[in-house]
Image (cartoon, rainbow, N blue to C red; front, top):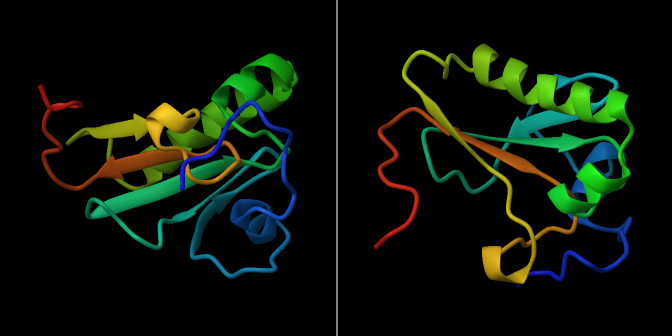
Length: 125
């Protein structure tokens, strides 16, 4: 069910629980700013999620409230994850949903990294 990205952060969301190791994940990367893991319902041969360690509901929330160090660290982490997945040369797609109209389902900022096949156009016409 899509969430309202303007609501306060819910520390009981699934990604908060993954950050606290209350729910297992197949992690591929972690540092002081981010954690990356395989999506449990992949939509491409490579489908990774990169989440910030901080309590941010969406990209909008993150860009407004995160420190410069958190923003730089998170963006760098997304790039590292894509490179380590071998996705740069053939190409990849990044996706961050914000709010109801985008279909955001978890109230914690997450960037999808899709790769491993031709992904086609972004939106159907």
